[in-house]
Length: 222
Image 1 (tube, rainbow, N blue to C red):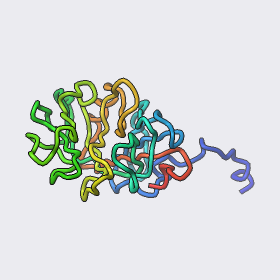
Image 2 (image 1 turned 90 degrees about the vertical axis):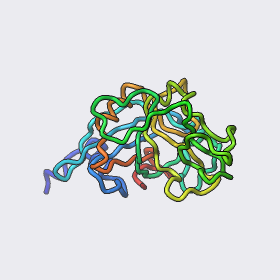
Image 3 (image 1 turned 45 degrees about the vertical axis):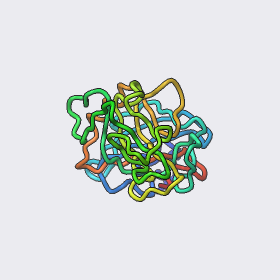
Image 4 (image 1 turned 180 degrees about the vertical axis):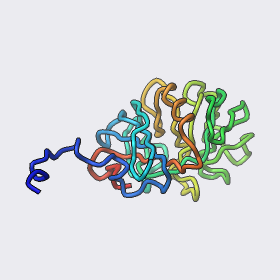
């Protein structure tokens, strides 16, 4: 007991980050996207494997967040250029480019008919549509093929997805970096996105946890 009391205490002596989260989604893979604070537009994305009851880091990359930082996902407002914090499933992958060899996720190829509807008045709010339906205004939708760099490869983040709340936000993805901060998505270098798609296995239930290092939006809350 005396020896244990003398052991140094600090971050290096903590459990891996996933073990400190309130929830990891129940699978054996997890991605964490962590910013220094709520106003940050950059941070670190790390992907983890759970083996024999313990989480191990499988890779990491620099990440970018919304131009106006991060905000609580449950109360986010659409059009604020904020990244929603929380724990989210990853329903499927998509891209303008072919799926990287070894990708096991369902991968949907983008064509010139592919749109993501963000029109609050549309029956297809926060959904991929082909072609653009009459009730979804072009100015309230993303024509996916026009984002050649960002949507070379991407994963859909199930923010406001299962039962969409109008006005909360639509089209949140984990995708390839553009020129700077995002409009609310999480982005990483293309090489990292390709590694993620080769690693992610839908049979292992991967989720994405987004948050800050500490404070009200701490990733450990989710």
